[in-house]
Image (cartoon, rainbow, N blue to C red):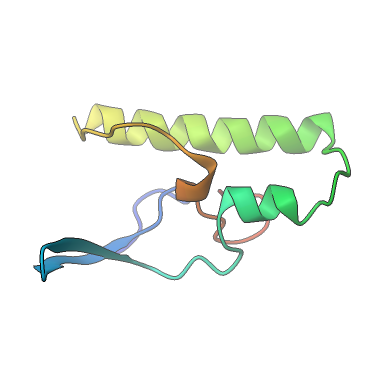
Length: 87
């Protein structure tokens, strides 16, 4: 399935096997947001970077809420970085 919003990782397929649910998404070259933050090794982000990341996450949430997609919670480990400044 093609990505319809730059801030959304594309979903490829979902299947269950041996009692586990597997969700396969497109490759996120920069890993997840938790890894991105940890890689900074204590260095602070600029205000612009923080606002950019928050804006992208808000756009992603707005996108899924408009489509009535149910989610449990938002975690840094579930926010994927596709390219620099796109989470």
